[in-house]
Image 1 (spheres, rainbow, N blue to C red):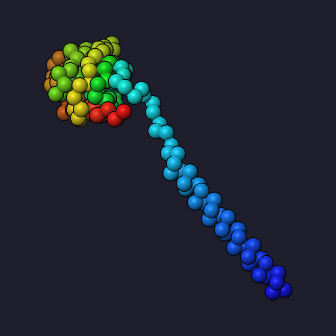
Image 2 (cartoon, rainbow, N blue to C red):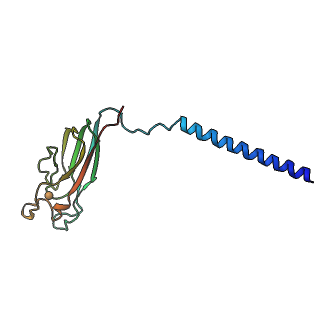
Image 3 (cartoon, helix red, strand yellow):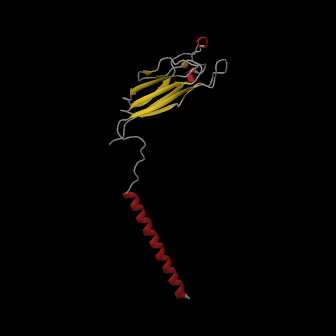
Length: 162
Ligand SMILES: [Cu+2]
């Protein structure tokens, strides 16, 4: 009886040792073979196509307090050439300016969709605000009461070290 117990005990101890060795081997493997970084864009400077919608649920004669830029965050890397398609999907005249980048559309008329593509090189890293530069003027169907809320940010990252 005692002999069978001690055989079982040593078998369990052996099993525990094997499990510990496998765990050490696995941790060494994961140390020596790090996962490759996931990459969805080329490593070097690239031309990136972005699109931005000036969205307004307000319509002519209706409420106009929901105008916004969609999306409110754009990301590029320094050195990328950016082609930013701006479409005005609202019924009011709007525009966009990336402050500090010297990049802006002309006034984009409302009603039938108006669009303009801005092409620029993201040559400065940092976070830059984009906003509408046309003040609210109901007499000319320009912008909307929420003009001050039409804000987003362009984030230009430093490229990864290669
Ligand atoms: Cu405005």
